[in-house]
Length: 331
Ligand SMILES: Cc1cc2nc3c(=O)[nH]c(=O)nc-3n(C[C@H](O)[C@H](O)[C@H](O)COP(=O)(O)O)c2cc1C
Image (cartoon, rainbow, N blue to C red; front, side, top):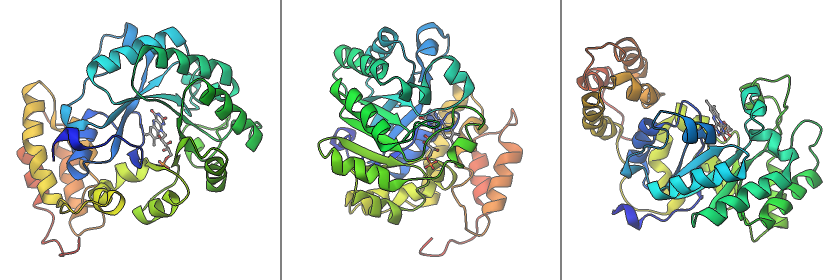
């Protein structure tokens, strides 16, 4: 299928995850699903405007691809959105969900839920600057501000500025006292609140995030909402992605086999090494590929022990795969 034939929509996406959904993970993920919407890690406006690294680089294969921005200065966000549009990204997403102290000190992430007017100005500035969809990923509340009215006031204000697509991480964030990891586990999930939002705002495109582990659960949520976003499970058990196109997008293309995915990553790693990279930059994202199958531990161990070595080559993937026995037909 040609890349241009794949529609950009939020029916199924992999969540933005710092240090996890880098370009190598995204290339790997794309080999398993053509239709999944992929998000970058959050990139701050400061890094894009003042940093020296290549924060926006990606591989053409990754489309449809959304850039997640962290920031709260409308002019800076507009500048970054414009740069992203020039580079060919398909969507700009604003992070209103991250609770880390570092992010709060920069006055962005989840603490922006308390400043809907500012988020509205950020959205308006980005929409003015680009033709791309501008979307927002948010929590359902922060600290004691966790009523349904607090959430709807936020949605009202931000949608009035032109954002018509939100991803709702269906738990609130505690802005102090919990680490980011605890903030992904301790506040309880409230899917019903997201469903209620869709009933009350049928014209908005709303995707659900948080705690989703199977495509069957995705099917259930899709009866209530426009999209589902999966984070940790799509990283730790990436082969989940191989069934997304058939199960959630109604495609009849055959499901790619794990072995074919590994073989397709070999030339990718060769190119990465030729640019001075290391095997583990890429292979670290592949550790969960054989989860649950005989030999999965050997696969993980071989990669973990050898992929960081300076002389490791792409053949290491094939060596690690030799630990996997004959796969059962339904694996
Ligand atoms: C390692 C890690 C990094 C994350 N980084 C980001 C980020 O950069 N931007 C963001 O909006 N959320 C980030 N998140 C939160 C996820 O996008 C998602 O909202 C959360 O993990 C809940 O979804 P899940 O239960 O499917 O994992 C991160 C989560 C993890 C585990």
